[in-house]
Length: 185
Image (cartoon, rainbow, N blue to C red; front, side):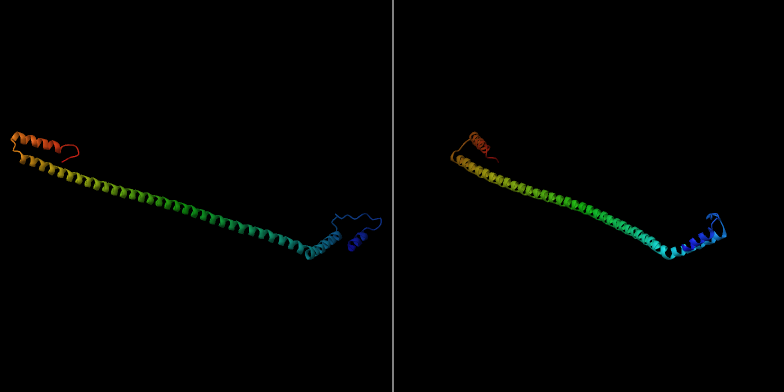
């Protein structure tokens, strides 16, 4: 700055008019360019490296933040897709469990129906067997009663000698007794 002060004093002699800094004279242009170049060298050497370093560091931080955001977005998308797949698998599994439950219920229903049919058939067969046995007993009882009656009627016929009207009356009585309730042929 002392150099600049000397220049201003040299041109600013007493009684001379004040120098015009905006006038394009060779001397002013030379010093302006020289000062600009010196200032540029000083700035390039001392000011620009920290400024550019700060700008580069800031750019790197921004790029790192953008990269981290991209990675997080990709991770989020991957997790979201994984959750969707798990949800779809859970839905499929739930549907499979429901289908298996329906099949199991249908199988139980069929088993119950089959057991009921078997029990019904057994009960029906037992009832038929009981009825057939009772029928056979009744027929046997009727046969015994018929034999007893026939023997009694034959004994009466043998005891008495009857005519044909008496024989008919005896047979009619026998038939009437055979048709009484509880005695079926």
